[in-house]
Amino acid sequence: MNVKAKPVVVVGLGKTGYSVVAFFAARNIHVVAMDTREAPPFAQMIQQHFPEVTLHLGGLNQAHLLSAEKIILSPGLPLATPEIQASIDAGITVVSDIQVFADHAKAPIVAITGSNAKSTVTSLLGVMAQQAGLKVAVGGNLGTPALDLIEDDVDLYVMELSSFQLEATPNLNAKVATVLNISPDHLDRYDSYEAYYLSKHVIFNGCQWGVVNLDDALSKPQLKQPEHQVSFSLGTPQENAFGVIKDAGQLFLAKGETQLLNCDTLKMKGSHNRSNALAALALGECAGLDMNSMLETLQTFPGLEHRCQWVGEHEGVDFYNDSKGTNVGATLAALEGLGPEIKGHLVLMAGGVSKDADFNFLHDCVNRYVKTLVVYGQDQQQIAEALNDATQVISASSFEDAFNKACKCATSNDTVLLSPACASFDMFNSFEHRGETFVKLVEAL
Image 1 (tube, rainbow, N blue to C red):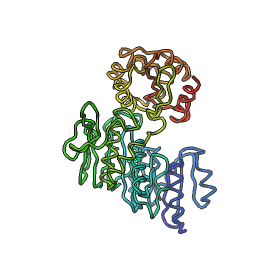
Image 2: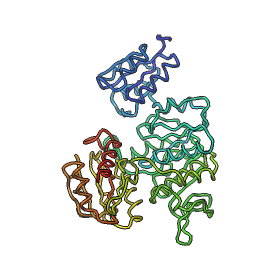
Image 3: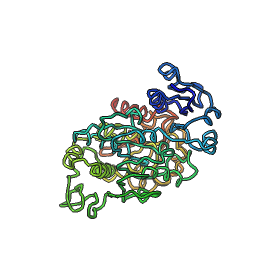
Image 4: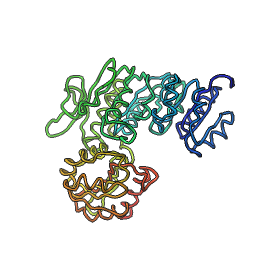
């Protein structure tokens, strides 16, 4: 190792930061790693596995940053962090691990972002590619860090990417890219709603094919136009676009005038999941996947845990776990997807940490489909004030109290839906922990 060469500086030592350190250390490149925390989660592992790496904890060392060949910034820290901004002003290149990944990946990349549903679409497309016989690597914001996926024999990369990751990814150059949808989220990090959604549109930089959701105007590329575009919507499709056709009282996924699949055969229920299926078909076709193989996958793919997942039924009441509904847009999608398709009404459990969200966006949909809203957690009062004239609102002292009150409000044919519209970290370790708690309460009925 040539320690006299300028180092690569890795900022942020969570799972992503560890993967970056491992990537460069394996290539015999001098690495300096730092974190604002005194004891970040992967610092000990870095010391153990890569003792040659220089560690600086408890703050960002400006001298190290200014001596860097380049800085790899983990998604937890914004570009606006003063020490990072000072480095940029001094001419130091600051990129994400996703940019490093894009620079080294030898196979085509399908890149997926959006405020909601990106994990479902990413996972679905990954299964489609696998069942089509490709060696596919799936990860990014979902599961495996990007740089852990780099291998010479991969046929296709399917990557879920967040706005935080895309902030410092100027040249992704994906084969196919999409912004599935946009709704307010992470407004505690961005100066404006526009700054939030424009950070996602970096995904289209250098891509060959852009997939556009016609049902969401902000899905259309805002910064740079892809070479080619394919669209999807829940409406009747135009020529060469994906959509839904109604025929003899039944709904079909379609491309142009061609019916592809009866929607009743989908394992994933709700209009939002029909949109997810169409997005996956459009992305897959642009990536070169066989259409018949993709349609076969759609008939067996069950969806993901904690994402409008049917948990069970008790005394005629269905229970759905949408704990991944960590923002207003996700909860809106769940309500609009399930509301028209259930026999009775919805009893909605919502609450947690709002992230400065505007719950008024839920007003009309709650008024249409929700007979009772049970609120809990840190920002329950904020939710109640926004929606108390849309439906009956009941406050709960704990998550279990919220569940019990929701059960009492639900009658036969109703559905109890956990879709919090908030982050979970006031009461839980993660949205998965929250969803697992809900599932256990249902199973105990």
